[in-house]
Length: 318
Image 1 (cartoon, rainbow, N blue to C red):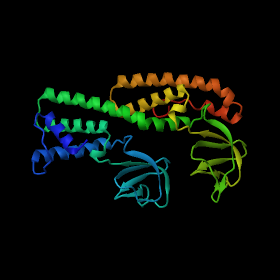
Image 2: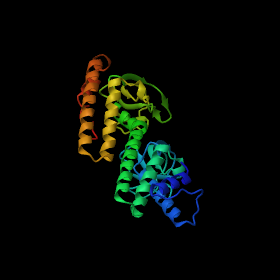
Image 3: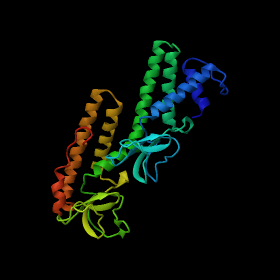
Image 4: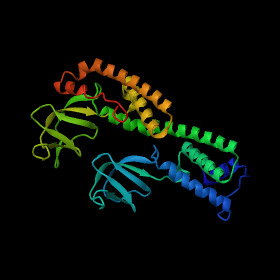
């Protein structure tokens, strides 16, 4: 959507005639465009499928337009200032590369997906109409339009972004379809290499106390990187949602919808309905897991013991 199209949409919403071109000399146009910019920044600040992504950052210098960063490693607390990434605990710029950082940027209005551009325009119309002393019935109609637009972009976000994050988190618990015994043997100058698709790695030998960090295995007793091949139980992330078993797809979708709704929709009745739906989906996935894990997982004693720990589900611990 162009700025002229957005401007005319707002003008029509308050009963004004559309214009042929944008002129900064017109005070009403300036006020509408300023409000459009304000609403664009405000509505994007939550983070959406089109303005955030996961990247490996080589240094503290950030891509142009970055407004927030969130490392996947929750022990790291970084913030953005003057195009640089800073450590909140030390107040100093981050040194060296940082893998798996969620980057959020501000997208220009003209580059927005059409659904989100419509959402920003309706929000602008409502804000401008309120200042313009529009009648109450018209403002109520705009409020209803805004709620419809919010629901639409909320669903788009679930489809494109939340679904991926929830899928990755839930797969990390280990299921019949993504837990295997693998022989890890690729060693480079920094040690034994752990593929990025592995969400969990644990040696099959119980006398080895190793844990993964930054794509390597660390010996917990010595603090040194492991440099030899091992057999390990691994949980492998299946990125393609359509390749997942149907019961697990339903579970991921239900959790994703509930999580976004808890941030987005105030209605307690809606939240309860989504919680009930998520619980049914969780039980179906658990039943399939118990059925198939006897073949895929319980052949290894290490995996069977971890299954019973996987079923807490209240709020962000489904």
